[in-house]
Length: 120
Image (cartoon, rainbow, N blue to C red):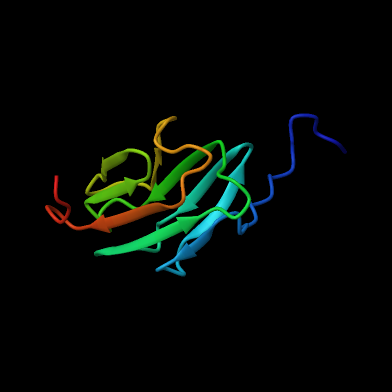
């Protein structure tokens, strides 16, 4: 018997290697249409990584973080963006604003830290 409202569960997204990452091997990358999601949920404490695009930057960048594992996420490219990470809850996706980087940006640096760890 076929139930018309029953659909198969969508497959889990497959990791990709769209950007080269220096400084951390725990950052996974996933495509969601023209947005590259960088999964930072395995990171905690303090650290830094540099992102490089050999074939051009994606149209949009997003960062998935685990609340409580870090307090702030800083993204440095054409502009500097600091995200405050909640202290508890489910994983959160932080969207980098359009214009924070351009096609010829040489690198994007991300830093994560505990409370008060990033200079303003």
